[in-house]
Amino acid sequence: MMYVPKTGSFEGMKSMNRSTILNIIRLEGSISRAEIAKRTKLTPPTVGTLVQELLEEKLIVEERGVGKIQGGRKPLMLSVNSTAFYAVGIYAAAEVIRTVMATLDGTIIAEKEIRMKSPPPMDMFLESLASSVYEVLKVNSTPLDSVIGIGVGMHGLVDSEKGIAIFSPHLNLENIPLKRYLEDEFSVPVLVENDVRTLTLAESWFGKGKGVSHFLCVSIGLGIGSGIVIDNKLYHGPAHSAGEIGHTIVDVNGPRCHCGNYGCLEAYASEFAIMEQVQKRLRLGKRSVLQEWVEENGDLTMDMIYEASKRKDPLTLEVIEDAGRYLGIAIGNVVNMLTPSKVVLEGKLFRTGEPLLSPLEEMMRKCSVRSVQDTTELAVSSLGKKGMVTGAFTLVINQLFDTGKFLKING
Ligand SMILES: [Zn+2]
Image (cartoon, rainbow, N blue to C red; front, side, top):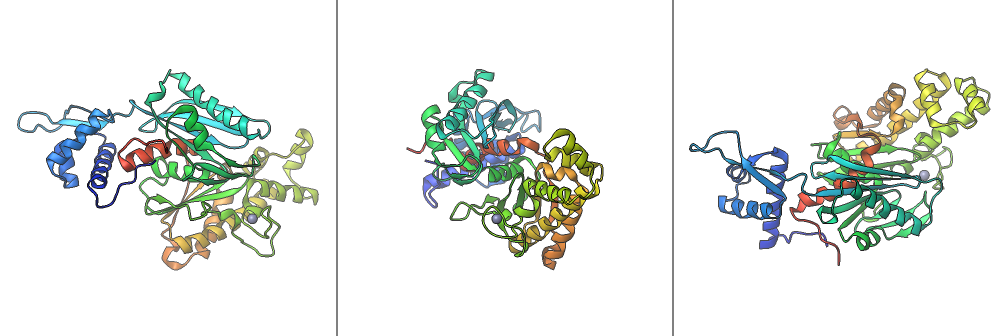
């Protein structure tokens, strides 16, 4: 089971102090025992005991510092032993399984990508996940006992407490026992989370959400999802489905969404919706550079749309600007409710830049109340396609620094 500090108990206090010390060492890069005691207001003997424990577990290392001289001797400086242990991250979608191994400071040292032509059945899907982990272990002949955990970022509805993918629409599978299967296979703790939430965690640790206590991360692909960080914590909601911004309704008279409702954001601004809107206009005989490309290459692709937008094709810009406006309305509504100080935007679609972002920002400001109108910052993610898999291994690192303890397998 994950280690939960018992509030008020001696063990609980000790664990909290351990994670506080471990986090200060991580954030400072290098720090002395005396400085830790000063910052945490813990007594020097308490700091000494906990640091000794962390040293014995090889989570931290010490070396004679080059800094200030104290009483003629340079202090012993402590730092995180980043390369002694590894975290594995898996991003599991229907068309691709991306797996990486990273050091405790988030440096990726091995990666493997498996492309799938058609959604596999459950047993084949699980076997592919396992084989991708074996592949990254092979790269540096990493022994399994130096892997402190595996994190999985899975699309669809995920129960992160049980480690189950409740429903995966793109694979058309239900109740995938990700945690149980991978823990049986590798005997290391496994954490499972929805992929947009892992992306949000990656933004929080390594991206545009770093140091931001309240932010929203909106991710656009074939669908639209979001992750919510409140008080530095990911918000799940009781049904594991908080953040479904794609199915907030931006026009009750709008087109039908695949969820059954009408006028959802996803029916206007997802990649799928944008392709549909472009096709509709082409069928109406509207002129566009895309007509020629489709005739030459067959099907319309998102890459063609990106290229047409770069060339300022009026039809393409019209569709993208509309998508931006609807995104702005939906985000403005969320901003009113949650008042995040930042909104991080992720997805290839944001490559289109101004034509999407400018109407988005205009509508977001217009739809939000005065108190947050000018203070909510907009930022485009820079993590790229590794965002979700980075978040997957960050699940493991986050738990380690949150509790100060190695995770244990849920017996
Ligand atoms: Zn919908």
